[in-house]
Length: 365
Image (tube, rainbow, N blue to C red; front, side, top):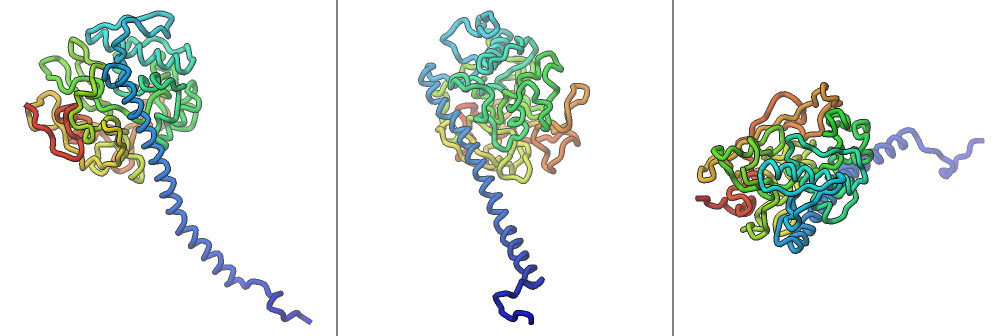
């Protein structure tokens, strides 16, 4: 006889399928929620990283006569950079100041990592563009590298930090292998996702007649034609800032938290956390910022244009796959340059005295 009791009855195939369907539905409902929670957590970490720079900057200004922290801003010392077993005297000319900033950057890397295989740079390199953060890391006595200067969505940089001396073999895009171009590429694992606006460490404007001007090329803000004759780096002070709640200190060159893929920061819908001079960190879209000015013609109404190319690294330099740079609008690399008609907060009208968000641009005469 077969038992007839309901307690001994098993599940039918239809019932099992219903249960599986319900579980799949619940997972489908929960996954976006979990994904959003992870996004918010990473954004919070990113904001905390920026806040560190803001808090450290206030302390630095108090210690160094109101100066904004920057490579070459230790103006109360005459001879420094002993990490090369020699010292270098600060010089107040463009060439000497550029070399001094390079020495300052590499000296910090050597002292904060314990490495001794990175030589003194004499190539044309203005480290304040991508490595200005090193001064704050030195001031805070941080051991390098540290996640505190990397956005949690910056996978390439976080991977490089795991093994700085072999960072090109860690499964992420990278520049040429360390040592391929002399000792140039050994510095990349000590870079940062975040960078200062240019006026933080250099003058607000310059004219072509002075032989120097700013340009955006391939995503980097740099001086073309050299710095002005008397030098610029590291001379800015807090009291030059007229609107601290409206002027940006630091930004990321990629929109990493609010778009499906990381895109270049000058796209109008790019959005990210920004550090402001009042030490607040707020999420803003590029389109909501003032468009800025042309550094060479401060009295004109035109803006500074920007050219950006997301490309694959030249195989002749030993690069592997796509460079780590933020992608174009379509999420791709290559395909030529994109020109932006305004550089926004990286070329604030009026420089440190100007307004990026929350007000009209100042009138400059």
